[in-house]
Image (tube, rainbow, N blue to C red; front, side, top):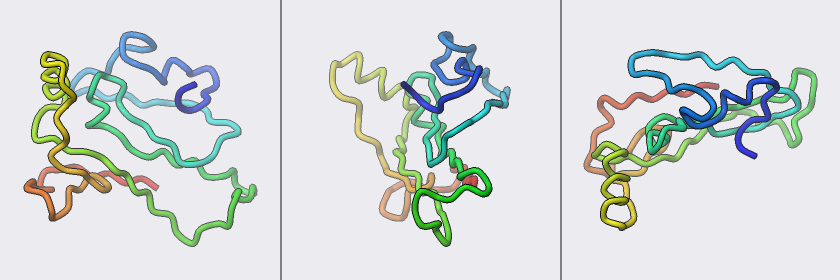
Length: 133
């Protein structure tokens, strides 16, 4: 089992050329699906090779209005997304690993909500950070 239990839209949850065609560079696509009987915080990511390292986020499904939380309702919610950042194209990183038989190079930085922080020799300038809640 993988991802959200989707009603009549299972084709929207899978790798390119298997369940759907990829979204071409410069184009966009809006996913429309129905969620029933599910709640919680889920993870979404690209399904195209190592591009999942570049496009990801949290999908938060709140309890249906009028339903109670399965725990004490928090006063505030803040998604925290942990990620990795390479000073290279992630496709090239995995390509080098498969050609040499070695493990992929470790990332150049770890990120919290898309930001590398002050301890790394990389700039957060130019990084795009989207938080949805």
